[in-house]
Amino acid sequence: MKTFVSKTILAFCLALCLEGYKAQSTLFKAKNPYYSHTSENILKVSNSEWKKILKPELYQVAREGATETAFTGKYYEFDEKGTYYCAVCGNSLFISTSKFATTCGWPSFYQPIHKNSVKYRKDTSYHMERTEVRCGRCDSHLGHVFDDGPKPTGKRFCMNSICLEFVPDKK
Image (cartoon, rainbow, N blue to C red; front, side):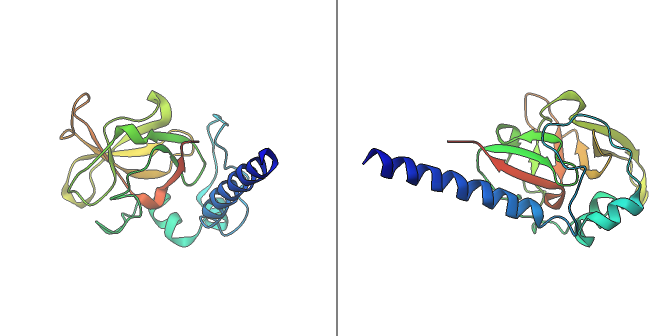
């Protein structure tokens, strides 16, 4: 009985690991040598190099600053416990406990996981003044931050789902 339970648990864990790998690998055209959940080094990679590695949809949003269509992202109405990472480089960005329900059409968080997980840049495109949110490690466009979020920060980090990779908490 003990051996059966151990094998069942091992098979389940292996399936979860493979599923996570499968999900991650769908983001890339080629193996991404810069992707890591543990490395904190700042990346200086040219867009021409990223274009060789990333799928066109991810490249367009993350490297060219496009925005996915509202209400279509896979994490918009997603409610599982875990961590959100940068889909381009694997940098940790947000934990699920900082995610909140919103009607803006994109997954929203009230704070990043670490102060330097993200960085900010003034965005004056489309005749508006906004604050763009970029990955603190690879400088990819993630979305924008607004001052209409919930307590405790009052911020709404409005992110593009395509730029995020979710890893569930271990049970």
